[in-house]
Image (tube, rainbow, N blue to C red):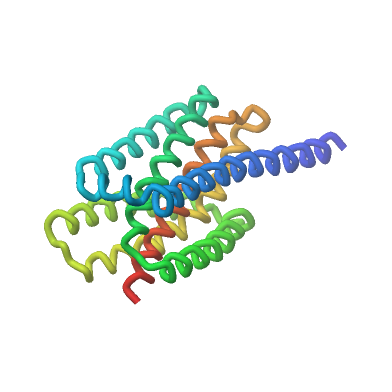
Length: 229
């Protein structure tokens, strides 16, 4: 009886943790979407020329995003309030950087990428939640490939400047981040099982950030692919 009660309690607690993670994820995506809309439709004439005319400003925002990711990772077990503030700041910055990318593509490509991303996210999330196989080894391998993709992207931007290489990188990102969506959803369950009821809100923010990064990078890769059609 006690074991059955414990199982029900764990299941309820896990569901609440998933709800908290997806709540933060929705908040982050909502902020990014709002900022991106404002930059592209309300302040386009004042913001976009400044960013396009100052490459260092654009790269500075990317560096700031990387710093925030590291900060959120280090504070996941500590201050949940600071983690949430950092996540909100990251989402706002991403809204600006995404708008710069989207400004270079037509609406049809963006809509197709959005719909495809939504479908793939739902499918891979369900896979990650319900699959019995441990995806840890696959997840670690995919994260290693992310580093390779970042290096390849930088080499292509500054040296090769090759359209075929960029095309290959985009398809690679679709595969990598689709897999990471499944892995990161399974990781939410593992994190809760390790920490139980003591699971901190900072960890929920960190899990939301992981899924946020998966979605955004998958979306941008698909935008680049559909934008060439």
